[in-house]
Amino acid sequence: RASLGGLSKDPEVWEEDVLPSKGGGEKEGEKARIAMVVIGHVDAGKSTLMGQVLVSTGMVSVREARKFERDARALGKASFYLAWMMDEDGEERAHGVTMEVGQKCIELPHRVVTLLDAPGHADFVPQMIVGAAQADVALLVVPATTGEFEAGFAEAGTGRDGLSQGQTKEHALLARALGVNQLLVAVNKLDAADPPWSQARYQDIVTSLTPFLEQTGFKSERIRFVPVSGLTGENVKEGGREGGKEGGGGLREWYTGPSLLTAMDDFLPAAKFLREARGKPLRMIVNDLAPAGKNVGVSVRVLSGGVKTGSKVLILPIGDVAVVRSIEVEGSPAEVAGALEHAEITLQGVDPARISIGSVLCKGKAAVPVSCRFAAQITTLSSLSVPILRGTPFQMHVQSLEIPVNATRLTATLAKPLSEEGRGAAEVKKERPRCLTGNMLALVEFQCARPVCVERFEDSRPLGRFILRQKGETVAVGIVTAILPDA
Ligand code: GDP
Image (cartoon, helix red, strand yellow):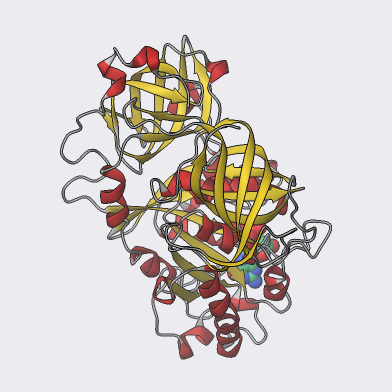
């Protein structure tokens, strides 16, 4: 634990802030907010589809779309969705804070959906992790074209060039491991299926994806499929850009379900999580930072609790104290940053060189634990190619934190996972196994390269889940079961 001795006399950094009853985040009569990450294999049509969504919801005019399309081409990608996501507004620039994960909102009749970008290429999986760690729900885009669905659905790690690896499975698994519990699957490019708008092809994809997604831990009632074409706009918003007359004729013959936007507007609001997160001590994770004059500008996600301007916060693992000079939520100045919100915060009195991405801001009383060692339950992926031994090194991702870790003890393999909270008696298959291979459930102890802020999963879901990667491939996901004293 970091030394908190010097702080005990400063009540301002010690006690949690008393927040207005609503605590930020959700005001009376306001539309429920949902953070959605868009995932799927490269070329699944994510950008095209999201572009169509932006135009259909009026977030972008056709004229602006052309401008973004030009910008996108200059960025080497002929889709305006990414350009739109990357378009910083003037205010952001003035603060000198650039977001690692683009954040923009689309407004639907009942929901405001914050879009989180997640590039599809294998090299970008760490960014996808940052996006998914902040998301409540995910939109998984899969192409229905011959061969393309199959390529995307192939086991990750089967190809060497990164492009031939299927990312559909890995993305779905990562999203679930990071806490996403609702999934909307857009079966895309149906205009180019064989034959176009084939109901049989759509059904085949639903049938092959469903068991995998359920196995991954998504509840069947929280998975929904929608057939679309991002290119023609069919079934994005009834009829899409072309009115659905020529392009969508085939789909209309058999499909009577909701459009993509209707399904998005139907996502369950994260009310339960919001209530839970509000009731817990302050935890803000630093996703990005930049010096701002004498101060430091940080992009944070409030994982739990909340903070007011003028308040003093403790920055861990470094143990420094800073004053919250100003807060901005969704581009507007705010008094409070509340649970589950993304905020831009100016911190005074701390050296920017000492804060890093993955630092946690909290209060002294219920401070986040700081440790180099922890115990966990992990699930190895079927794509794991080299067995895990005692001493095996990994890159660990916890929210936006990325850090080298080593497996220091293989405690046991398990027949059955611990309860969802990570508690309960483990059903041990084998004590002290020599190694772990793919598709295994195990209890393992880890040593981190530096002190980190992680928590038991039962205390904090967002800081209790992690992902292990090796040489650019995800090999396991896990939950923290105990914080261990430094050896
Ligand atoms: P991303 O890598 O997932 O963002 O995919 P893009 O949106 O860049 O699309 C990849 C390619 O698929 C591009 O050539 C698109 O024109 C094409 N494409 C995207 N959506 C559709 C669709 O609904 N139908 C057809 N026929 N092609 C599409």
